[in-house]
Length: 92
Length: 400
Image 1 (tube, chains in turn yellow, purple):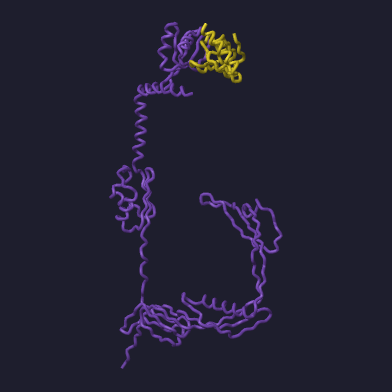
Image 2 (image 1 turned 30 degrees about the vertical axis):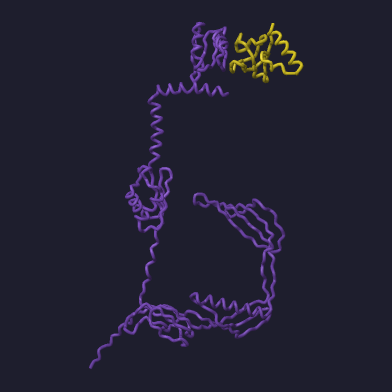
């Protein structure tokens, strides 16, 4: 109950003060640079990993990255960097 | 990127997880917030990644739990290098020995070059007395200034020595003391008159003056005698100044043309091949009515061999002739000074002086001055003449 109230106030505050949504910590943030690099922040775990498909579970939902020669360049607690030739990103 | 540097310092491994299609090991490590990088999927359920040494035991434990094999493909980092160095003691020892040997051997003097003298052995011997020879340890050698002073002290016939130590070489430059020139051979001689004149003064360094001021002398007359009254013959020397007369004929044009440069110039560059001149640069030929050309050739010389190619630079200066017309007075003055200069150039020695000039005859006609000048000069008229022993005349014995 308390958490939902907090979430609600945060959302309302973000709308009123026009704060970008990614500054709120628990929202996943995905940055795509061309079709060569994808940086996912606030991820939870890696569900599937193959050369042509990487599925990552985020704090909210999942993301499936399709492409060729996909490599996870780095896995650090805050972010996950995927490199390769990205052909599609699906939110699930 | 900063964490990469620390990983290299601490060490990391690249490993392959064999037959783990569900990526159990990786998922476990990610959940445990372990740093992984360069995760690449291989065929048949294999995948590779890099992990730091700190998290290696966690990785191995996870692999055991999930019953998959790990294969290490690369070990990077300082601890691994040290470990490898420990295993290859001889190799590392050789490397260290090499560096030490290079360092030690460059601390010796291996080469001594001596120039500026035709007796380098003497300098070398002096150096050996100072305990400097090829193979001497550089740190035992005195500094360059002390070596210079010691060498100057040991070698009396050098006036300067420069010592330079450069790396393992020692360069010594010697400047020899120039020996004083040997005294001239002083055989007995007289000072005789070279030209006719009237004696002004006699300054005899050696010998007996035989003439007096005011006396008229003819060429060949003895002025300072080397034969003394007591029968000795000496090297007579000294200066005998006399008044001498010269007659000079001068011809001077009244109008002279002097060429001066206006400052305008063009430069032409050519390449000269076997006498043929090929223009390279500078093609303008301004219409100078009068010009002076200064030519400068730079031949191609490689290793003291001259090739038949040359670079020629012609500088064409514009000239302007200036006509000068002198007044008769000035013309005579100029003629007199020409005559004086001509006379002085004919005298010997450096102390000739013009006393008087007389114009005997002058004639200005057809724009030319014809003049005869009588110049009175005081100059040294002495000339050394060796004394040859007089042949002893043998009188036939009188028959009585």
